[in-house]
Length: 99
Image 1 (spheres, one colour):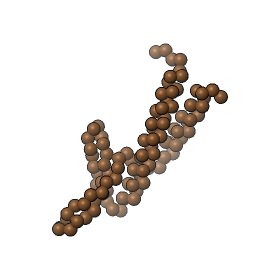
Image 2: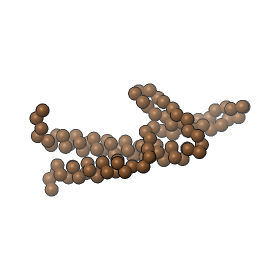
Image 3: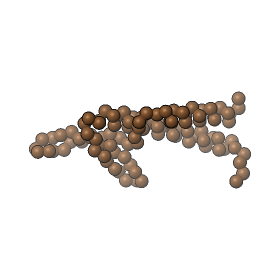
Image 4: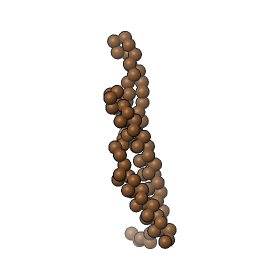
């Protein structure tokens, strides 16, 4: 098996992982406090950078654990995408395609 075939197998395995990934989001879960009726209350948000701008989305306490898991999966997805990009770069360089 040559290097190109090995890269394609690695690419296919990464694609399978990406396709079978559980629910995920990109961004981070952040915690802050707000004063409501004179009392401090913990509040949670999903912080995302979209087109160079920070966007925050409120997370209710009942959804917090789901968003934490989804954000952790998003971190894994980002790593998988970077690995896939590196493999695709190598594959493109091995191709003898003339445009």
